[in-house]
Image (tube, rainbow, N blue to C red; front, side):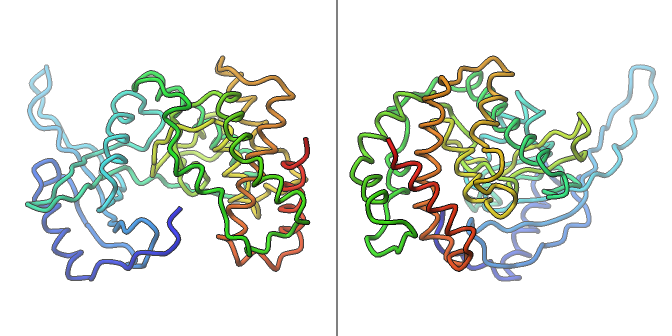
Length: 328
């Protein structure tokens, strides 16, 4: 999680990149009505453009009739995507197209400039809290399908592949003011290495999306329609204990119905994994994993999400997660 936003490109630089993009052979003649989005600071440094894509079919059909053009589709361009993100989307678009929006074109250079970019379908729907539980169910389902696709497309991963940065994210300053008595908080930090090693040994390591939350998904059709499946965007593939992702989403999206009193996302992803025939720890182990990862994410986000620190409900839930995680 980046701690500070990256300033936007200047309008002049964006116009220059737009011209280079429109000159790309894979884009030329297909991308129309291109306009820049709001030039605002963001955490990725990417620039977004909006337009319409019409793929010229060209040639003739078998009966000699001239081919027409495909109806223009709304398109979104991401300039400055990471190289790994683009390669991941390209692979999924080819082998697991039900997981991502349609990919129209992509590359890693514009003119002579090294810059990764993508032109994708702009889906009509983004997160809607009015969908209730369906919002998170479709998201978690897409997260599990991402894990399944990763198993098919990439080499297997295990505990040795989990990056050290995933450990560092749970560390904090001593004066962070976590809203819990010193005992439980200290116990979590004193036992962290032991508990982390146990978690890696007790939970299946999957190549996960890496940043699974509702703002990194889009929908063509609104749930609960069975066709209303989430499509994932902005992947940052990471080898992780799979419990990490739903716990991360639950703490990050706490205001959106992910409070302690609501159904836990870890248990919900476990049920989805079982429906796909994937392994899930026994109930006691799963409950312990859930408690630890929610506690660790609560510690992590307490320092990041300072705007929540005046909310009594947030304070109470963070305290609950910490004390539950510290309990043996």
